[in-house]
Image 1 (cartoon, rainbow, N blue to C red):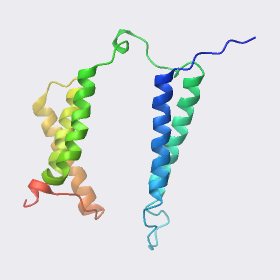
Image 2: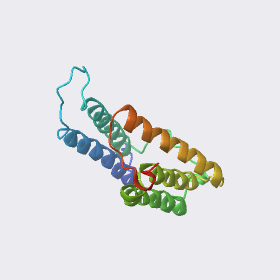
Image 3: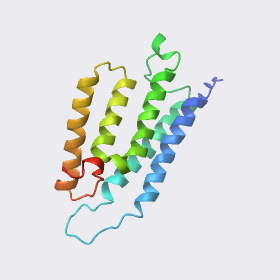
Image 4: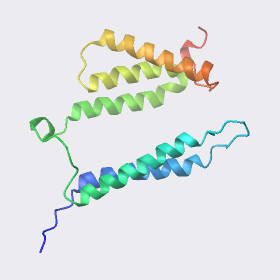
Length: 160
């Protein structure tokens, strides 16, 4: 007789959430207009690819969670207890970004997001984080608005 490994419920829940996000992405992609251009790859291609990848990875992690736990996870003292302060900072960054992007604009909201994410991962170099976040956010803004013709909110920097 073989003994069955216990199910790791926290990991199973996270894996099901990942697979659910993939399914949500696949379903939501149906609402994207297929477009009538000459491009071989339409606007649905990448969301379908991302959704399918999330479902596949979620499925693999689900299988691992029910067969004893995720593989290749480092087991040391740093992983024994969750860092709730870091989790709170990361969560605050995402929520602030969602709340501020409409009025502050993409560049400022994304710069604040970068700063808080860096802080959540342990950075103590605020000036560097501000500069890197602003440069990356501005570059992404101009690539998407000028290069791809997408309409991202300019917000407070709209007159520049």
